[in-house]
Image (cartoon, rainbow, N blue to C red):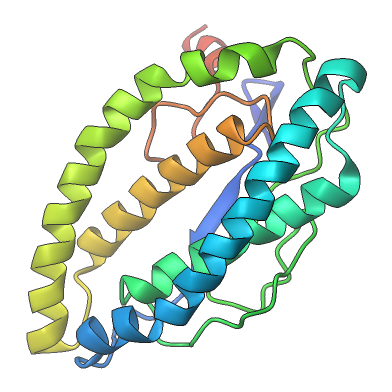
Length: 216
């Protein structure tokens, strides 16, 4: 996906992450959804073990070939996509119950309100995997404070949905944006992309080069 800024082609962050669901949610969902999500979290724990093994294998594959094995990438994408579906349900931001299927592939099939897509990287830096766990620390620091804010928002939204049956739009947007930042960090650490997570809650933030073009 690209757009033109001042005559130049501007790229977007490879992680495309959205939630397309009504703000109205049945009031019982604030209690029912977290409970109903428990089997999914158990399944996610098992998938997490496999994902960790695949990430380790991918580390050496990238180190020697500069490429993430395509089949493993599809599986990893499916796990991350499934995580977002489960989290969005458990946080009572949508009503449809997530499927236990693992939709792999870089483009989200669009069968669920929570969508996640990431293009397969044809070439990855062979040396960057050594540095990613250190380079990401500034993002972790900012994300910590954003997550504290998201926790407060979720508490307020819990009562809002309980009494009104509807998410305040600004509150849900903030939570989704924080989750987007979190998942961009995850894909970076999981070696699925070399695109450094931008310090932005925007769904389509400018890259550093785009800011330079815009400011010129």
